[in-house]
Image (cartoon, rainbow, N blue to C red; front, side, top):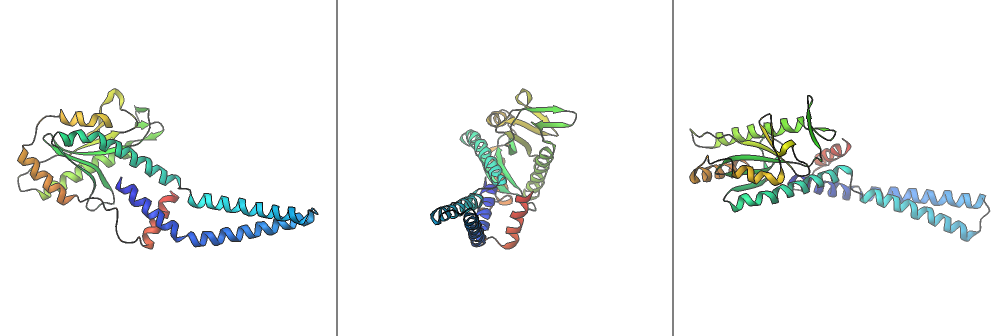
Amino acid sequence: MAEYRRCRQLYVVERKDRATRAAVAAGVVAGVAAIVASVFGVLLSLSTLLILQLALGFVIVVLAVAATRFFRSPPEIESWREDAEAERHTARALERLARAGYTVLHDRSITGSAGNIDHLVIGASGAWVVETAAHRGPLRQNRAGLWAGKVPLHPMLELVAWMGEEVTNQLVAELPAGWQVCVQPVIAFARAAPPHGLAVLDDVVLLPATGVADYILTAGVLLRPLDVAVLVDAAERVFPAYPVNGPEPTWPAMSRLRGLLRR
C-alpha cells in the first residue's frame, strides 16, 4: 500500500514537471492542425464560416486527445493500484489477529532492500511475513512450477522465501543472545485460491487471504507473552514503517519512475 502511494506521488510530481512542455506541444500541434484545416478549406472553396468551424473542430480534437493522454494514468500505475487494493483486502482479513492479541505491522521497510514487507504478524504462534498476491486465478501447478493463469509465480515464491530468511536473520541479530526465531513466509491470494485451499512450496505457505488468520491462530503456541513483547519491540526497531511522505522527489527519482513506466 505504501509503495503504491509513494509511486503515485512520484508520478504526480513528474506529471506536474512536464505540464508546461505538454501544454506548449499541444498548442503547437493545435495551431498546425488549424492551419492545415484552413488550407484544405480554401482548396475546397469553402465559405469563411465553414473554414473557421473546420479549424476550430481540429483544434478541439487535438486538445481533447492531448488532455486525455496527459491525465490518463499509465497501465503500470493502475496495476500498482490493484496491488494496493489487494493488500488492503489482506489487511482487513488480518484484523481478526489484532483482536486476538497479535501484533500486525503493515508496510515495513527491510534494511538493505528497496522492497517492503506487506504485513509482519507476531503473536503466540510465532512470527509471520505475509505478502499479498493480486494475481487472478485459476492457480495451477505443473512441472514448470506454480502459475496464476499465464503468470509464473516462481519469482514471487523465491522473493517471499528470501524475505522470510532476511527478516529472521535481522531479528536474530537484534534480539538478546540465545534467542532463536524462524519467521514463516506466507503468500495471501486476494483474488485466487491455491489448490485444495492450502499449499506449501519452497517452505512458503500459500493461502487465500481470508484463510490466513485462521491458519495463524491454529498453528499452536510457541511464544510466551513476554517473548512476544520482546519480539515485537525488536521488530519495530529493525523494520520501521515504509516511508511515503519524504523530501521533494529528485531528478534521479523521476528517472527511476520513468524507467519503471517503460518496463
